[in-house]
Image (tube, rainbow, N blue to C red; front, side, top):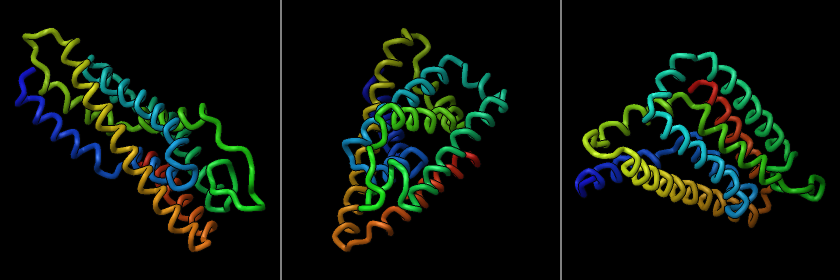
Length: 206
């Protein structure tokens, strides 16, 4: 792969990655309530999902997936409902993802549950499949071995995606600090809960 192709690809995906989307808003929400460090578990699941979607898109599996909307209806329905339920709990200052108050102190959200949440959000979005199916093939040189090219592109994609996720989670953490100083823990939970419910609805409508 030549340098010019890589520069164009990096510029294109960096812009797309940093644009607010479902996964970025999820990272912002969790960064606000559970902190950047624990949000890394969600990021790990999300990156696995993104890598899977990108790989299958190049192999043409995405065309089959998009041709069977029933698969996405079920996946989106369950994932969106789960996020809505979490958002309602956070809005009420309940659940393991809300900022604890004296009355709601409890164990933190399990790392496995956070990773699954990130994975489902990444994989259940049909727009993600369509995007990668449209974006990746033009940057691949059919006259050269595809495997090394995919390794390079996936490394770039996951690096930029991770950087964007950390950026959003850090922004959520900063907002959390501001609201904590003002003593508005319940308001912070309601903002985070509203964002979480928004991600759930976004997933349904995607």
